[in-house]
Image (cartoon, rainbow over all chains, first blue to last red; front, side, top):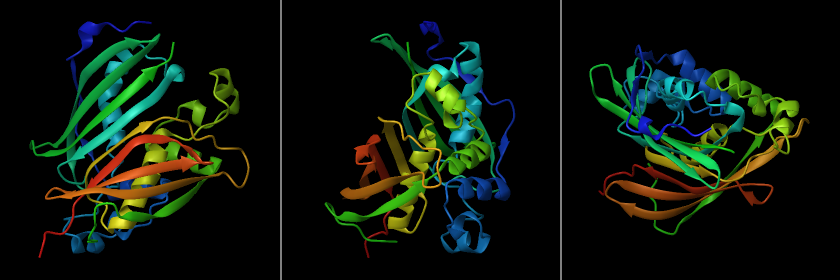
Length: 144
Length: 137
């Protein structure tokens, strides 16, 4: 399957804001075994200068995948052939409970090499008032 | 906030990963790709066995960074996934080891190079986190 390179630059926007809740942060922190108080206790988060509990650094991947899903659906990506190549986050600030986040996914790269295909997406996550929070890059390798 | 020096080696952190951890991560993250829980499907796509979510390995390496800095607020964090972390279906699971070296300290923060291994093999490459450091007194 060769993905149409004219999709490079295409933008996919999350249809509604992602609401970040304390309990989802706690559930995610539990799942990665992170027992830090800053993920659970608003007072501990306040002591580090945060207005509410913050999320672990890789938490935004859940939002970026949601934003990229319409692209994956459009190209009928077969997930069983997909290997995660690279992942990168550039943070303006941590995601925190109470955030209403807007995410837009841009297709940055579609490249074929040695029979495999490389798909790079960049997802910009901001508050619903437009303040930047984090940018998330993912590169997937679709195996031949 | 910890003060870092270029070249400083950070205390390696070790994390155990079992099949139950993969199930918990799948549920919390919404990543239900069956290669992370089904031996049958993992084998069918040519994997040696069920593998950990790459994002779980990245999250564990992130825990190491937090353990070293005492503050999970990072500036930048990126990795390349080079080898799968194969998780056996037993009570022991496998161990992921995260070592770190301070690469540079700038006004933007400290860059930490991460070496993440499983069974002595590197599973991540180009793994680096930039963390905020306390302003100079």
